[in-house]
Image (cartoon, rainbow, N blue to C red; front, top):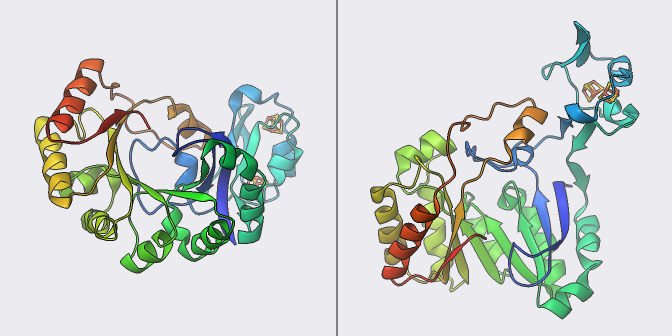
Length: 299
Ligand code: SF4
Ligand code: SF4
């Protein structure tokens, strides 16, 4: 069984043409700016939309485990006591409590993808596997990809590359395009902002290039994290040494997802980071272009 948090239909930002994007839930990285915090945990989670709540307290009365209780008239959620049964979501009349994450068989995921094959064929689109980190559910992913390949569906993988070489190679055997997220080259910064060492990520990118895979490198630009002169020089040096990168996509930081952190009862640590200016984006784009890279701002 895979755990999936969304299958987005008619997507136009995750590869060529019209696509279905399958978002696997769970990621071994902990990027402080993550735009999809609901994708990080491998477990099902509850999102609470305070603006939808009408205060009926059905959810509190339904919870038998102490996961929800009232304090001064307000509903308090105790993460430690919540067993993830989802009963509070089922009784909520306004969908203020939403269960994120669905267990699906590989057949069920494939059938969802297959429903829109006509759109992929007409638009030269296909399916994109994203996350979370899709490689973390490698064996299921390999199975779904094989089924898609048999039906001649174009396959894009959006990955951080944080996986074993074996899984990466097996998954990518049938992948047509890889969107490779390269967050920070400096390993100390990588550990600070992402929580893991980046050696595997850098090595796996080289492996994909050696395998002659089509690779677009995606760089999320986060002011104060990876935008100083040295950061950009490090990117350019590493990507030139690696060679074989078809396109560099610069993804400017935004904080519109910060509200999701509140809904998940999580803390958003980058509250004070500003979005990159047009000038900064243009200068960084130019730096890459001067070094021979094809560059796009945005995904
Ligand atoms: S998911 Fe179940 S245990 Fe958790 S708060 Fe809701 S009812 Fe309580
Ligand atoms: S059941 Fe839904 S609407 Fe009612 S109090 Fe709970 S979250 Fe609010």
